[in-house]
Amino acid sequence: MSRINSLDDTIAAIATAQGIAGIGIVRISGKGALKIADKIFLSKDKNKPSKFKTYTMHYGWVVNKSAGKKEIIDEVILALMKAPRSYTKENTVEVNCHGGIIALRKVLDLVLASGARLAEPGEFTKRAFLSGRIDLTQAEAVLDVIQAKTENSLRLGAEQLKGRLSGKINEIREKLLSILSFLEAVIDFPEEGDVERRANKKELLKVVSIRRLMKELLDSASMGRLMREGVSVVICGRANVGKSSLLNTLLNEERVIVTSIPGTTRDIIEETLDIKGIPIKIADTAGIIEPRDLVERAAISRAHKYFDRADLILFVLDASQELSLQDKSLIKKINAKPAIAVLNKIDLPKKINKDKLKKDFKKIVEISALKHNGIRRLENAIADIILSGQVIDSQGVMISNIRHKNSLKLSLGFLEEGLILLKDKASEELIAQSFKDAINCLDEITGKRANDDLLDKIFSEFCIGK
Image 1 (cartoon, rainbow, N blue to C red):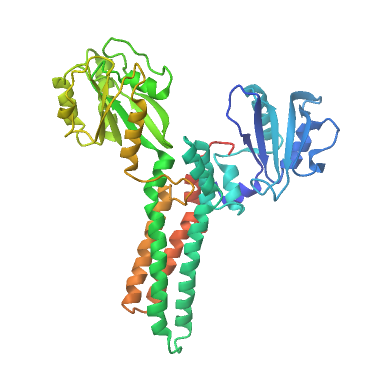
Image 2: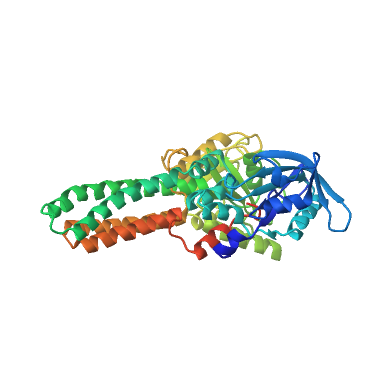
């Protein structure tokens, strides 16, 4: 998708989730948006949308006039936002239809037949970026807000959408530009007598200060990615120890069938939990038993693959039984992973020996999934291991995107290269180039310096209509 075509065409798409709902929205943006609205919308007061005031809503009908007669498609509310005060900074029309898929599809088809083309994934937000209304970090934050699984991840995305991250990046950029301007002045006016002394003292202190700011921002990356992407937690153990009951209890719903028959769970059941503000992608795996058929063999094979990818394992044991040989064998297999021993069925007489587990597990938590006892302790233990003593500050400025982290890391590398050159009293041209490279890396984060391939990759992750 080229930048020229992206801005010249009028685009349209269904902007709400498709399915049965009270309201559905067809969004139109571009130079021809008002003209298309005039063609398809019949207002109750007979006025044309192109004559409406911006930021107004109007009751009427979407009408197909192409067949020589006025076929009413739907009763709607039309919202109008004229350029440049709209999401894309273009003329934008949003048709609020009834939410049925047929009504929405017919309205969209009529809009497309009237001169718009179907928007590509993320194209509305891409236009907002290309028009300069938002920078690239804010555009990416739109997706973070949409995909947020917890209040903390939503708050982090909202802060980035407000421009707090780009504000910090631009602050660092301005400081680097100040040093670069001084170095270029040195290059242009070498006759200044105190240039060398100033370049190696005053500017050296500035670089050290900037390096500290960049390192502080990079240090936030692990927590930022944790809030944005969450962690993978796998429930495992031999059959009939209560793995599925534990998942149901954590979810507070009967998500998985629970029976006394070994091997009831034959596939991976995945859900998302919010534990202490952390998005937890939790998976219930098949009980590790001697497979009786091809289905169980495949289920157990998949369970082992999930063990390998897990950030944390909840190893469920039956506290009413002594450790079996199978339990001990499984403990050896997961020993390389952070794991919590979950001693289930404590409502029954206890037979398991906790002391034998202490060397293999970071934490041991006793619960009764059936009675819902000890679940809060388990959630606290999960959070303690994941956070490792860190405090969640979702309102602070954080790096939460791997692309941002990599570009900032490269920028820091060029800054440190410049610092070494300054200390070694290298030529101002060499030092200046290091700082130019550092600035270029920062500009890749905010999109001041971004190619079409990068933009297409970022916006292809969006849904159509956003």
